[in-house]
Length: 129
Image 1 (cartoon, rainbow, N blue to C red):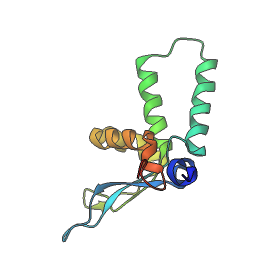
Image 2 (image 1 turned 90 degrees about the horizontal axis):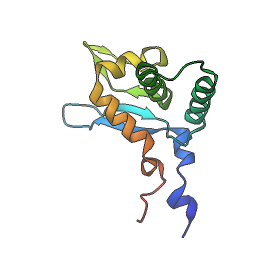
Image 3 (image 1 turned 180 degrees about the vertical axis):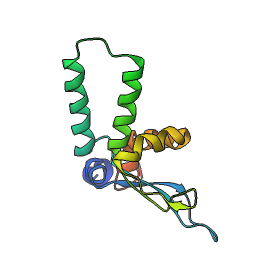
Image 4 (image 1 turned 90 degrees about the vertical axis):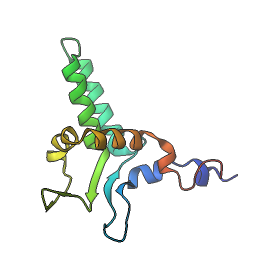
């Protein structure tokens, strides 16, 4: 068994993989997000940054702080978007509009959060195949 082919989630986590929100149809183009994986250098750096801030805190983490960190992690894990429109205009995901985007669309937030933390989405081939 070639371990790299079956279980390397890091290569594609660093590259980013498509989370398809709209499959291509006769009338619609494919649309979605490109997500870094939880094993990516980008995401691991954000996790370390948050951990350092939390260690340096003088008070306990509040519910609001924890929620803000959740969005911060998700924005860091989102590389880009493609094919999305909002109010008739092309929507381009950027870190500066990311939190507001995920707050406006909680279902997309949930899909993205589940996608980037599932290593199987970043394997070269499906595990067990």
